[in-house]
Length: 300
Ligand code: E4P
Image (cartoon, rainbow, N blue to C red; front, top):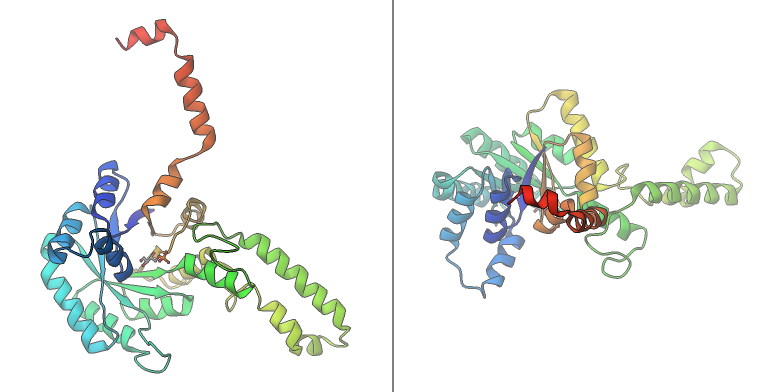
């Protein structure tokens, strides 16, 4: 599995690259904003992006900022022309850039098709369903980015958990526990209703809403979203690579690696979390303490 660093912070990119464990970088407008804010708003953006490209050992995803087909294609070409000479540029296009669910719905797909035909690699971003990923792949996207963490947020919100109060952004979402709770609730709802036929139960609103609680149209977690996309791409031999995105903790990275996902893009704090375990720290303390003199002498 390749690991991309999900950041626009140059120091993090340089450090992670020096460790030899990352294969690329993904940015988005919010990550760029964080980097600019950290520098008090003053930054030479073009030079900064060139620095990111020089520091990254592989592809760097840069996102367009508009939502219409024409503007996205123009911005993508501009980004590509300006920066492709400094590293491997990939253009992030939102899969459905509609701001109101009415307009510009197809503009992402159209832009992916046009740019891919020009030979500009596209990373279809903000992918929240397997169906969106399938369409992005058919339109020619080189990469799709399913936002696993945001789907976990959505599922927790759906059952009434509030981010910041009941859970933190970086908390692991235990979808197996939630699935078991959902099944239990559904069975309690069904038994309380004393419905006569299967059809009556299947059509009952209370049954249907209990069955729809902890899933998003049959997707049970962010990792489940990644699994479904991997399965669909394998079924049809799509070349599009899947970037497990919006990764929030080390266990999520493990689970997408178990699925065989092509790439996981992770924030720097997740990289650190992947390395830490209290028993490793306890162990190294004991080893350091137990070094005896004759053994130390070998090292001069
Ligand atoms: C990467 O491509 C995404 O932009 C990023 O992973 C989103 O992560 P977030 O949901 O934690 O903001």
